[in-house]
Length: 575
Image (cartoon, rainbow, N blue to C red; front, side, top):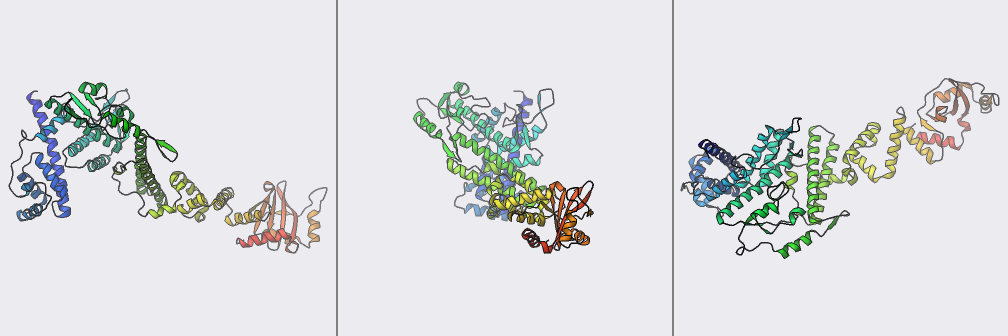
């Protein structure tokens, strides 16, 4: 290794650790400012800074400068920790000013650094070994883009934070997803052509990277201990291709040949959480016997039923992942609807759908005997999405929540035509799914008003009531006065209307008044005949050539039972 490369490598190590120390210190200061004291977590993080090679004097100075505190204030802050029963290392706070641990004696830091070097083939970049972010420029060759520097830089920081022990992995993953989305990244493209949402890609890259780093450290330890054998860890719900070799002992060559070490789908590949540790044949005792592994294999392959479908343990875990993905997508939808100014009812329905998904997830996990992994859902850092008051769920029928998108669009169409008749979105849902009679009425009213936009609800209601009474005179509409004439109709009965007028003592003016003062009209024969209804009488006109003629008329004194019922119904609906 030449001098130039040594210096380059040294600078990268220094840069990575300095940035890690800065993040740890920022979190310590945040906790102290929030509580006014050194909390248990801050105490733990201070100890991690010591392990990273800082002296107690260095740490004290960094805290003092960051807080802008005086020495008396620092003494008070430290005294509270010294008197705390569960403090990890009182010497740090007793102003003993210990010397830092030299790198040559700091075996934990040496091990971690060597692991990073092996993981990255000496480059100390892209510690997770992620292959996103690639783009296809049209020649069939995928090229690593400058965006990868942003992506891999955040992932490298996440790796150092978790493996240093200073931060828990859920907090780090939430932070890195927020950083990536704030940078404008939403999806990550891979050389294979596959694409993932940023939260999925980041979590997989970090978790896989940690597993791979653990593997590198295990191999380092095995070299130092002089063994070529390893025991591969066992975990429940492993994918079938991994379940056949987990929990057993292999030589290093067998890790590659049997377990697929170094491949995307094998040991330490994508989404693989298996680890392996040095093993000494004849001396070490296996953690998982063959008999125990066979028993667990039978147990995990015993299917459990949920909603009519059966799942093995592995299948159940995969279903959990699909449910979590669907919930993250729904959370994003709600967030976009809120930011886009969608109707509050629509936002609430989308929230209710998300709550229904959460409830289903909880029921499924309980039935399958699985731990809920809600941190996978909340990794997007979108905050609370579910309704604050869960009782609001009762406003929306379950079917409507499950078919939210389709029902919202249908509601908008009904609302546009029927207005207040459908009420709120929740009311619309209750009618559609719980009140069959009212739903049929709304569908009929909507169809009627779409076909006859000049009419209104009163005429439809009157028409429906008349049908119930067995009176079917045609389509009931608002009256439109016509210019009609009292003329002979034809050869067979040329003076029918005149005869009826004479018999019923109805004049020409009376006939025209019935039309002019009509409350409604029945349209018959596809519009070829129209019956006008007024409180004083009724008249029937018929289309002839391009005009209209009176067919027959009668006054209120000649109303029969049907005529009287028609007038009563019109009065009841406000006509």
